[in-house]
Length: 383
Image (cartoon, rainbow, N blue to C red; front, side, top):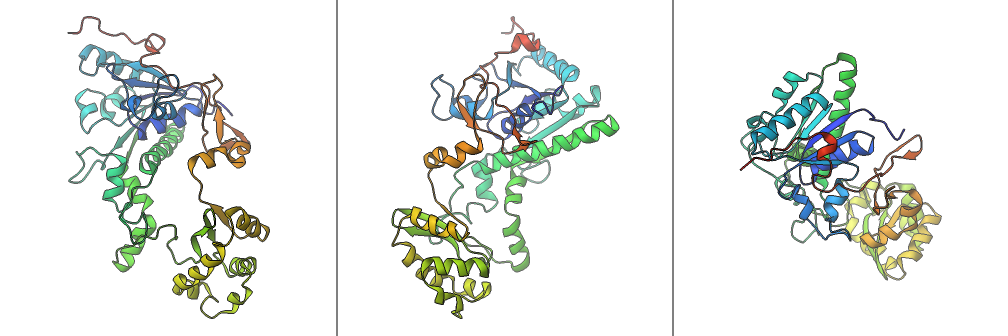
């Protein structure tokens, strides 16, 4: 099961995070991924973030493991011609996230390549999509968080809008790309024909807002920010300040609420008319949370975790990334995965097949490391 996509060859004309994340998934599933990079510096993410001990940026290392790298000067017609022929001859999948219109001008677009290789699955990752007044604009994850309202609903209730602290739009778009590609490969098995998959950062961001947009469609009201408090009427469902940090507590049923009240030493709250039903708890959430918070503040997070876990009340501490990395759950679960070539540890794909994780074989490639392996002919006479 470590070679789920054995025999599948992918060409990635991608940069940043969304496209590389998509092809990283395919690579770890066993596909051969050939990353096409600019010979002058390569993928922009090679210079993002702090470098590893090998001098490679942590961002590039994270999202480009298990791939090959070739360099192509897209301003050189002979190199582009050779790349085009490589894709036509070798590729099962081609994925690109270059600026709108670039691949078409170079003769590397879906129509051109699929005319010569009808079995090719071609995936476009765009910013705002293929239609509409913004379709030709560039875009990045934080712009999409801002534009679709994600920033507006994120942050403290009385504070400013906040960007989500991880690139959820980029990563989500990469995942949608893989979903579309795998569906197209299944269709190809039946028909012999490939197809074109189109995804966009904007549309992924809108999909993250599905619940909020449903509320807008129904009421026309602007959703607010809730800080650690969850939307949707569930209460209690928020972070409470313990003596040494914040603990999230979610008691979404009458059963869990009763268990919580007893663990806090206030069984009388169960029969209090203000808190007796889910609806009344939501209506009186501020008053109820004040009472809960006053009790939680008297003890440590660990104390309350033990008490609540004993009675199966859902809870979790708000941890920083180092705490999350070093926690026993991360280590025992295998979600932190060492490379087989000794390159260090990365977060594994969050999926198992037959109860086994897919391997992390090789560190991210050096720029142009596999030019000769792939058979790339570069023009030595270019000006």
